[in-house]
Image (cartoon, rainbow, N blue to C red; front, side, top):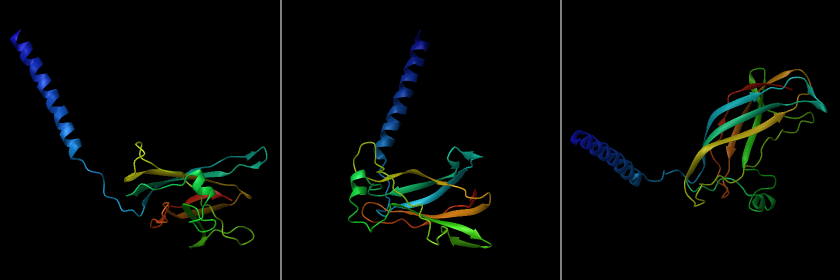
Length: 184
């Protein structure tokens, strides 16, 4: 009986030690020190090709780009109200900026439409906040998708230069994705 009681006390003491250790460790952890200028890293690019044509025409190939982000003051993303009133932003400015490059021989060129105008795949992403809604450093993964509608059965090798902008107009350094082959 005494051995069982000793074993029980040993287990309780071990459990208490683990809990105390975890609590002590968590109280020592500090918030990460990220720059107030957002920082991004390229993680992956996924191509989801489509086959055949849709009811109203060609189905498009989807490209999904995943980037890792860090921001020291957690002010990434725009609300619907901020998008409607973009007065602090340049006209047409988006907070997820994409420059699409297409390979022409051995040279990467900015992608243009049939009229010679640069193709703009930039867009908006909504606020990325901590679950507590209190301001502070944040990090995570941001997925951004685009659809490319083919006009012929030819294929293009494309890649993207990307940067993001926080709501105080701080822009991350640009990153470049690996290339993918899409129908055009």
